[in-house]
Image (cartoon, rainbow, N blue to C red; front, side, top):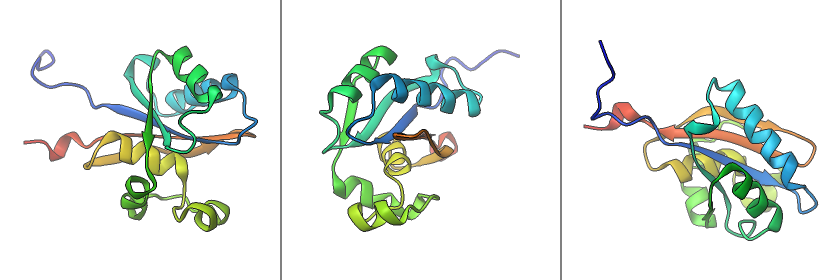
Length: 140
């Protein structure tokens, strides 16, 4: 029994949050750790997403380039729209952004309206990362 050529693998999006001083190498290492924890490889990653006000950061662009991706910038409304599906709640991020987790919200919003978390937020000293994919069972 082979794979159905008409069925594409789920689109995996890494959502990231990070502090201004975070180096790109830390973001890349955290994304790789997230993929490993989820049992995925770098080839499964389709996008790197974050809040729009962070998307222009040189560290994010360098990390995305290292991963062979272009960053996706998500506005506050898009992040708030998926907040009910965010499982991690940071009181600091809730107070400043009105969402529980930048990484989880960015992953969910970046993966599309039927997305589900594959890996809740994990953290390094200066960054957070979560993985989400489109829910293939919702497709007709």
